[in-house]
Length: 146
Image (tube, rainbow, N blue to C red; front, side, top):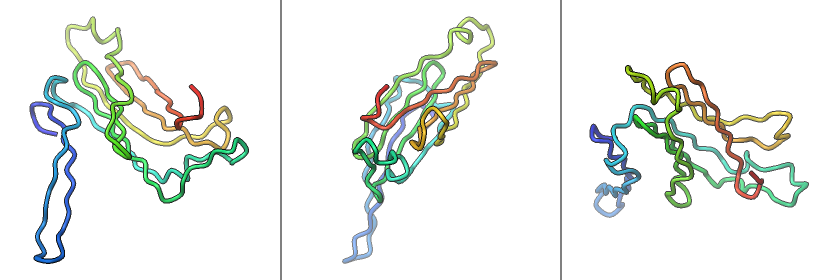
């Protein structure tokens, strides 16, 4: 993340022949979104997101799921990094904060949660604090319903 709000994914690799390093860059978010004030990442083994198997769907152990959450001055973004880079959700600033003369900066935390409602399935949970507003966004693995 740079000061203009450009977010890039950098992948480093090493060539064995001459022991040289290469870097490849992939733009995740351009500067149109504005400066990034908060960021949170989550990388889990998809097997930990699996259901108990009773519905016939199970995660693939060893397959990594990577997520990134970014908050700018007006919007928060939930981005998946693997298997492909994709913006999953755009979450606008809370209406209560839009009306304030002295704006507050957002704060993000991303993690896994399991409750009685979700059963043995772990749900990805994003907590966002913005001024005096605390919001939670629950995200289920694809195929689990809304």
